[in-house]
Image 1 (cartoon, one colour):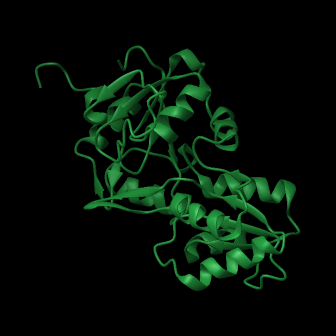
Image 2 (image 1 turned 135 degrees about the vertical axis):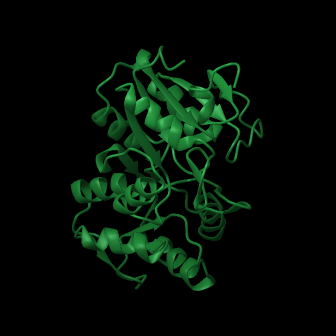
Length: 261
């Protein structure tokens, strides 16, 4: 399999690590691909840390990585807002690290529903009623309805936690407004960012992830081969019967593991 492809796009949560632990032999796999001079990109919908945070985490776990090989939906939405709504105020149902990154990029934050131009939803492990109501009131007053990602859950060491998709659903029911745009996998915005980074043609690229509706669907939209690993959410079929990976793997280690191991 590794001889067939020159570039590998890896999901992070549930594919390379889960919680604070690496998937067994994920470091061996990535480092072997790097040794073979394969192009490697890591793509995450998670917004609770910066690119530098993910770089340091993976580096400290022994993975041979450079910072510009990582893309997350925070970077994608920042680029979009700076290019299209740089003077608008945002409110986020998200964690403080996400809010800080947008603010540091020059996008102004507000929690006053009368002043909020854009509501952004993402993973928030400190979600509360007040945040939901601030978002709802802003949406009812005409704020745009965006999401950094649309995952229903996020994989952690002992299972899953609620993610942005559940919050989006609650706000859609509360306000009768529909989400307008999202910027994580499998959005056109994330796909454009990956295309900008990749130097390899599509038929030489393999995307590896644990979710049909985000990772595998994005690979299909990119026109590349895909591999679904069983180390993360793997919530198939569950309404995703029309989304088909090229391969099913136990873990990323299957990419380099020989038959007699």
